[in-house]
Length: 79
Image (cartoon, rainbow, N blue to C red; front, side, top):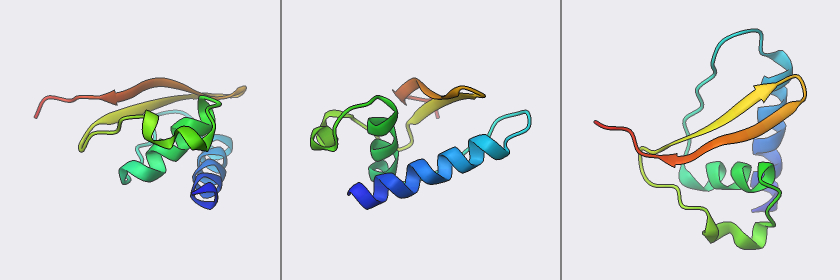
């Protein structure tokens, strides 16, 4: 799981450095999303089950020059 988290964070940081203006949408399974959220919340990977990611939910990361921070986790979107 550590390798998954490392790949996710590496990719997100690469996108952050390359981003001009606008939004980037990344669609993935729950496990990679959970791994990234644990990293950016500075929560140990031992707490992997502590973050709930429902199917078709939206988790949002805010990106700026100083880094990446979590805005929302597991937001439900009406169909």
